[in-house]
Length: 422
Ligand SMILES: *Cc1c(COP(=O)(O)O)cnc(C)c1O
Image (cartoon, rainbow, N blue to C red; front, side):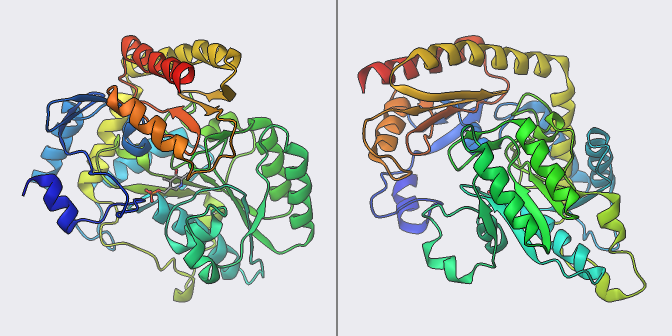
């Protein structure tokens, strides 16, 4: 048996209907923005391997940091113990987040969201303040664990579990055209009282279809939530680390969140690690001589030193002028291409925020995540050496920052070709 045959025999893949899915591609290695399959084909990773990769694959600087850390201290229990990589990444990240005060480590985006929700719930519980209600946005995606699914929008994936979710009030996202509906719904929920927290993906709802909205409207909403005495959680798992053109989407805001969830790009996309940050006010509500007020949460691999070392190395690269100027180049190239998309009759709702550009591929038919246009487009691009993974009929580009002008042009060219030929 070759690897793909063995894969079919032994392995169950994520978000995959194993009965009808074609064979997975066997990737043998990756370098920069290219994935190489077992036939030696080079594929541009234009989705950053599910939005995680920032600096390209196999980056020698991050790989070196990982190797060095693995030989020095691969892991140690993080209750009662600490280590330099964890403290260093905490200090450096908080220097970007003057409104945040503490860092709590976990393993992935979903658990970072769980931690944020638990912090907000217990924040009120510890003070004997009866606030239980949670508000989230429709079409939101916060991960696949139960708390994260509860906060997520009704997306067609969660049918079997719906009965097990805790109650979350979903209000329309303030995307263009829905701002008033969103504000009205938020006002109504806040007026009912007892709101604990409001969780949102700032500026871009990723999995929901790269739905973008303005900082001004989010500022207004955060202001309303704070005025009502409730907390705000910015799920920056996807938007963090310059995806939106700034270090964090929250950097566009005047009103700052109380908690932030970070993962995906945190390690440059090399290892699973996540961070939840919170304000001093939240942290202090857990300080007590009463042990029951402790935050009883932690994972086996909390603050894994190798993951932290990768995160430090990724941050080093991110802060380099070379990376910053390439990010600016991507933003500028996208905004030129955006004008072209806006003029194309088959590309509707073209939009961009920072390094992310998206549009809807008009088919004239009703569309959803399960639409076959998604598969047609996916294979069209893949056969031509580019990995793009449309969300339903939403085509988007989210490339590693090391992509070149020529490589971006190649992707734009294929999108043009798809728009004109499919
Ligand atoms: C991907 C994602 C998550 C979940 O992260 P995992 O690492 O897949 O658990 C949570 N929130 C947002 C906004 C995401 O894009």
